[in-house]
Image (tube, rainbow, N blue to C red):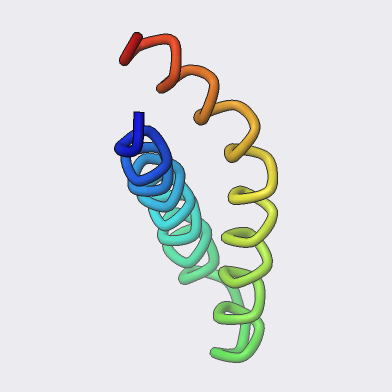
Length: 65
């Protein structure tokens, strides 16, 4: 289906954004600079996307078929 890619992208992007947000929240009590928090959040987002893409896409394919 054509919607499989779009649905998958929405799901793994949303999860990655959530994980990045949790990272920022977890670093608030520490003595980290804004650059540390933002850089870490970007890094966590990128790694989450890399990990989740090959997991979410087949799961959505199975669910939609």
